[in-house]
Image (tube, rainbow, N blue to C red; front, side, top):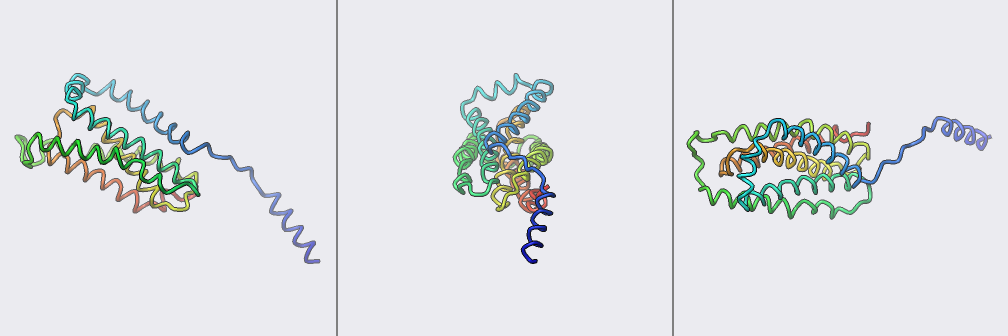
Length: 216
């Protein structure tokens, strides 16, 4: 009798099963997100950016390295976040964005040395740097919403590293886009506000990680 009831229970559960769509490879999904963001960024740059000023800034090797390192930090952090969202993938993926991130900090630090370490400029204490802070934080919101919507589909078992890397990726993406609108070289207060914006995005993203990465 018990065996019959068990068989009926199994048949009932089996009848309610829905087919599960297998997710694409993490790298492919990361590249898809990056491609969509890149396309939107190109449109924004073509419409709004002062490319002449940008090219003048990129003529300085240190500034070009800074820009490239920022972009690489964004790319590697997003890829690492997608890889770690899948259970069983190596935690060593967490180290992927570390080299470009350190290069980003180093090149920005050299810019502060080259431009002087004074926190005061001709336009006051913060000058236009507060705009950079607002840009990074504001641009990170829609980027994070799109990224976490894709990441949560993998139902990550360990959401903390996924959230840290994901928010680092979106903050670095925003900082990279900012390079095309940044009219002046890096200063100490400018770097401090850039890092504060990145830290704020990471802090909020990790604090809300369970809600943001909860299964849909």
